[in-house]
View (cartoon, rainbow, N blue to C red):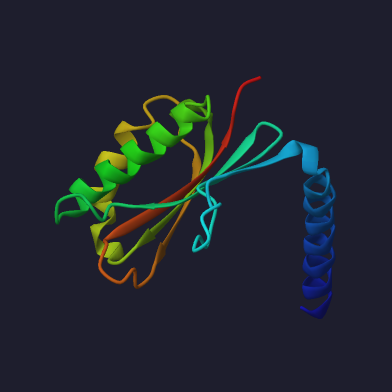
Length: 143
């Protein structure tokens, strides 16, 4: 077990080193938004052709998980379009849900935004302080 922990630790350090080296090339990194004095995050960070979107909340949508998921996915689609990408470019999403028992209803709406290529995905139950869902995505835009 100890050898496994050491091997995992070494692999993680190696992966972080690669990301760190890539991020050091500041000409290849663009920060979108987050320039306001009270900002706490960028709306997106682009490294070469990889787009990292900050989480989107469905706070201005209706009360149901379906309403909020649709609003979040439309927001993600619109942000990607502004950056020259589409939902087909999404390779990974992380879904944060206030109630994981609503996953089937979320999936019904979520699935409709990825008719062809389904990105990798994780779902985590968290206290979102009111909203039912937050989703963040990583996309790799075509050249």
